[in-house]
Length: 68
Image (cartoon, rainbow, N blue to C red):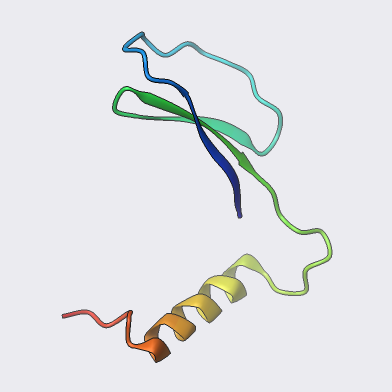
């Protein structure tokens, strides 16, 4: 699950190599750099695959997942 998505910089400077803690990465989109923290529940009984399948099922039942 994505925990945070916050812009770090909008400057047009070259990206520098940085070291992050586990579950944290930096993503650059255009001239904006995002610092993203990811976390997973340690007590969840549902796997990531199960959760994605459930979300897809729920969206398709709502009719929003139809492909035209």
